[in-house]
Image (cartoon, rainbow, N blue to C red):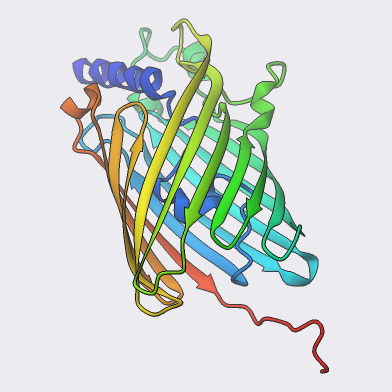
Length: 319
């Protein structure tokens, strides 16, 4: 009983400090912007497959554990990218699953810039591990009804200006969560993100890149599903900055990359990546300098990505 009470208090502390996992975001999103924006088109390749896992705040009871898989295909003749993304996240006694289907269209503005527009539809499921919940009245059917599995629909929108060295974009995730009259899972708060990223490719040996991202969360915290705890609408802001060095194997391909980032709310970390031609491995470690550090050994994350080459077509050639 004492252990369950401690775990429950820790879970509530997590939800108050970081609004739970209302926005599930990997540190390596800079290398795969599709994970945060349905408009992030990768037209250099026919497609991209990626998967990853993230264990947040190791040794902290009830801390989030996340796995994801994503795939995109770019249809050159239609200037269109189709994508699918699956996220499974567990925090404390709650488990959420998101399945997103996305569509993005590229508009070529000139020889250097293009505008990408994207949207996605999400199927979201929320489930509970009843064995980890501490009830005041055992076998209370009313209490159990509060923790039945819930299914909801949601949507994301985004745009991105793309250049050979720049990515400037914004996205709004979980748009339907803004409408209070609809039965939307409160753990999926509306999240708005704006970012700018630069990556140089001109140096034959080492290239530098960096980015800045602003994040706005809007939702109900703690979630209404947290029992009789008083809830309120909350609006929070967060920012993230990073810088990365890309070490080149050839004039066109990188061998590996090393970077660092800082995220407001006292988090900083390191980023590593190894490039094996079309196959990439990314690893990151971050540490929270707030009160969480007393119980945490930091956060570990790994992401794998595979690029699918496409055959370039010459539209004005004699053949």
